[in-house]
Length: 420
Image (cartoon, rainbow, N blue to C red):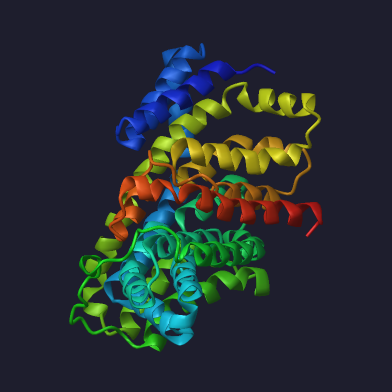
């Protein structure tokens, strides 16, 4: 079989993109420039390189459309105060004695219903800081609790990474969300254990200046706050339960509309939708940039060379799924970009190897949460900033975050090996 680009060209293109991202070049541009140079270095010539880049980005359009509409749900949940209300209610019900578990579960649920993981952490952070100050916990424990809870919720959510992975494997979004429920629960348990270990360790204490004063904005009631997410879950569940297909393109914005209705904010719906669009715009643009490098990789010999390497090492083909998710997410410091590149690149080889698409997607998706929070990505800085943590202190959490992501990944692999 002939390929348009060499493996070396594809790898160098990705390396160039990574270096540019580390140098603070806008990630989408870094990926586009890396793809362009990778294609030319890979021997494809300018015309074939541009064609592969365009084809790769075109393959992202269905994901981008769904992600854009997911912004409506995210925007309404945040702007109506529903996300904050849900988080606060969970923490209040579980109480101070179970503060770590409450913070983790609250972030998990906020992320699982469609709020992006960094926004989920930022939403829960003021509540978590106040609890930590009262209980005498340090910032390490509460930030790890929020990040780990977010990672658990992220792999069972209608978020950009889940949408992009499901699209690449041509599987139902709801099926992928359900497939990773057990890995998510395992990740949550590991999060609570690790965060509890750290709660009295170190000197990164919560200061009075870290705690934001509560504003006077009246939050909705809990039943009103959860109506939107419940509608989304019910609509997406119609396919696996009754074989009635409601596309996320419809379910997600409809859930947002219900959220504004039940919270009495319907007149502000379009402004809330615009706010949500602002939150997903960067992700959508990133995906288009990701598509360009994915297009080069797909048209290169990288796929076949990696498979031959696994065969030479006598490793089973399924190992490709979690390893690809881990490496690509680490390279881009992004769950969305990492899972997208890995899925777009290896969906066909994994399927041809006899591995079920849903299992491959689940392993790639969970694998993308292992080292996705490295310093060259925005998530690292956004989460650290949410609790006013210094970069050196934030770096200390990376090994613990990797353990949480690895726990869900290994669980997804075990589930595949057991045939479930």
